[in-house]
Length: 322
Image 1: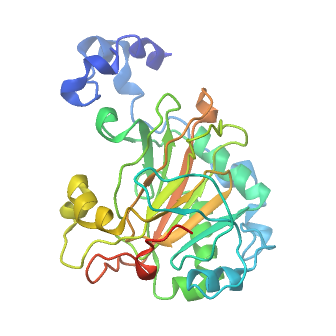
Image 2: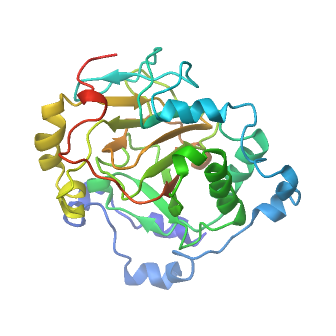
């Protein structure tokens, strides 16, 4: 295949420091034919082809009907007496990933087995087969992963139906917050770090993991999931201030709040739903080698961001370890 021949021409990352890990195709690469295959939707299947009956599963048929959606919504507002799963909070710069029963954290909820087995299988097949992964970040700066977006390939009707069903099953959380954006990321197992510290411009962030069962090596110290800090950007900060100047965020917001956070371990078919204005980052991960074993996450953003009045932490600062 063309891509395998071009891969032989790409030097190690250590030789690409000037471009932060990006490789510029050469004349030889184009003569091999890279222009005919790179960033091309050469193969696209869809949910209708994979499962013609997926639309007949009911108005909430993509989601696990055994979940107590009323309790989940109470959990969001800190009113629930039970937990859908377990959380861990820490106050260190290197969040732990050990899970233990803790009280609810308003604005951060974790749901296990969010999708039905059939839905999970369909989404996995679409994300593993379709060649709509057109975005890459500079590996030496942001990590080694590729992205696909709702306005550039990630628009199969099943993804839009999933957004609709999430909105319908959580009306109290989603009230006034319509789908704003959606993306999926696939990570290279040769790396152990994913997306850096940032906050997203939305009200509600639904982040779910669609990785294969058993792909996560589950090594000690590598939770593979998500670290959600309990601080928001102040209302007078612009996008550049809180999403490009990480050192500034750390010193001005995270350190004064003792790096309070909720760390959620990766688990297939687990969703983390949280206030999208909260700073968050990918936890360190270790996955098996091989294309199908890579870490995969799907993110749906709803509504508009609500920044903090002073950038302080939620829930009274979350300075205690729970």
